[in-house]
Image (cartoon, rainbow, N blue to C red):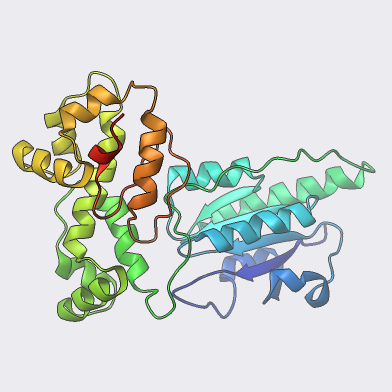
Length: 299
């Protein structure tokens, strides 16, 4: 069977890849496209072709572009490759009809699986005239940043590192090294970009995660404190009240109230964590930022 033509979109932020991984080149005919919005002008869409979107740190514009491409070309399968990944990101990909979700570095066996799957699709399509397309789009996960600031892309590594490691002790020097900066340069750049220190961001993100865990019934405040990286329950309670305006116990008592969602939406509007855009609040998802005063929203 003829090799599948893979139209490659480089959506990476921290690096720009000159070409696809060699294993992909060995199994597909790769054609690069610099602008998905001008797809018809750059490539010829042959029967059996597929798209491949490669990300390092996915952001909302890039993921929205993937969605719009799927809407314009619903019959063409899409592969999604990413370096930064999570369960919610994978769920989003599959709900938006991404054929396969791959994590860098991509294993050869996964590429072979994609090859067989795309060839099977091509064989099936050759046997039928049309197929029905279900019109469905899932909401982009809240953890995905709204965008990356020009000149500060390296700081995205710090934000994603905290999201994955907030339960353990995080040292600024360690994260600075991951960002390719000295400790002093990293601290200055982070504060200038986000108007708060890196350690302040870590505290806020831990409180954000604590609020999600406290919404589960019969959960212990002490266990939540330890779970999100606080060794001292009293210190956790002080920090929690500083950001939320309530003690953890009072917060738990208010979860069942009818105006919870509305109160949390008002809170999300007034508080923002760096690169975490407030969206609709549910009992599973809560976002915080600086100068929280939930007490002002009490019914």
